[in-house]
Each structure stands twice: as C-alpha cells, then as structure tokens.
Image 1: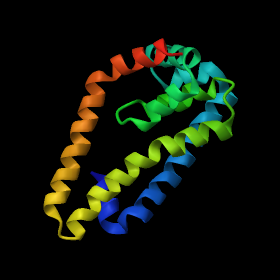
Image 2: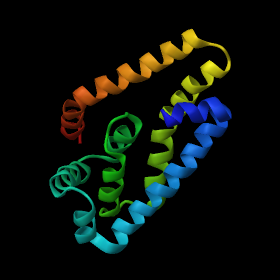
Image 3: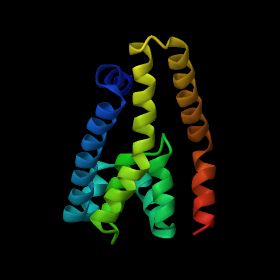
Length: 153
C-alpha cells in the first residue's frame, strides 16, 4: 500500500529510487551486522529453523538462485540478507544482486501507484491485479521454486 502511495506522490523514477536507497541501506546494515556479529547474532534475531533452511539453500545454490529470490516477490528478503552475511559472498556482489533483483518490483509498484494520479483507473486496477496475482502465484509455489533452484545447482 505504502509503495503505491509513493508512486502516486513521487512518480515512478523518484519512488523507485527512494525505495532502492532504503533497500540498499537496510540490506547493507543487515548483511554487515550478520557478518560482524556472526551466526549467534543471526540466530537471536531471526527464527532458527528458517535461518537453517535458507542457510542450506544459499550454501547449496548458485548466486543465480539468490538473485531469483530477490527478484520474485514474497521471498524473505531480510532473512536472505542475514544468511548472505554469513557466507563468503562479497558485499559488492551481494548489493548487485539486491539492486538488480529488487528494482523491477519497485518500478512495477511505483508504476501502479502513478496510474490514479494520471486518471488511469483501469490501468491501475489492471496493474494492481497483475502484481497481486503474481505475488500470490509465487507465494503458493515458492517451495517448488526453491526445490528447482537447488536441483540446478
């Protein structure tokens, strides 16, 4: 909801830009905190079972699999940032994955938010429907997606 309001207020470019700045800062803080304070810190901050599941996934999967998780909505971005901080992944490569993977979603949501400002209510409903259906589809199939990504690594 807030992302669409940002698109309405700031337009596609500024809204996506502001969002990406926030995501990069937040992802960097989580990644570096996890790297600095280690696994015991990550286990205190996030659910241990979820941490172990995604830890195994990232350790067994290629960088491309992590990118897909950032690209598709509904994957636990914060948890993935904690796990990535526990690996030997370099910060620069990690941030590249975050920026390239997350930008399409932020641009799409900002686009949806600009439609009412332009009087395009039909396009707004269409964009919102596509975003919602895509998110639901990914959510319902994310275990299958993860299994497929792991089998290709």
